[in-house]
Image (cartoon, rainbow over all chains, first blue to last red):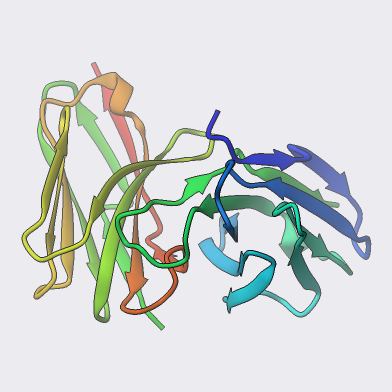
Length: 115
Length: 113
């Protein structure tokens, strides 16, 4: 157990629907990152939050949004789902924003299947 | 945008043999990571390399970094079946936030008896 908790582990839904993925970072970690892993695109950075504020944005679609709450857990909202959104979504956390010696701790992922 | 290329993408090797996985990246970076992923599982951190000439070793795996060539290698010595997994290198652009990483496509390693 890495200490980063993601729910749900698996999710099957239909095109056009909306889902919310949840992440609780490791205790003491202030920074949360979301990544998408798909066969087409590989592992791609989506977005980062640090202590409740958005700090970096990657290849995140406009249909996707995220937030980090005061208790530091984060949610990734995916709406108007398309077949191509089917992927494994990872959350990762770190204590700080900048310090190369620190590594990201990844959660187990949420596997989203859009039918 | 920073590009990361790994090769080979697929590697099948016999137990006891040695091999090297290569990771090239396109622009200046201040950190490079190697991760391992077992099928359907999360990513496990293996090594962090921060400076030119850095070398890290853990068991049968050794990683090195040449920032001038923008190249990192992951060397496998005397492979065993337990090393079968997908290995990713991930690179951070200089000055970017810690977790804003660009990943290679991964090298799927299969070790057979």
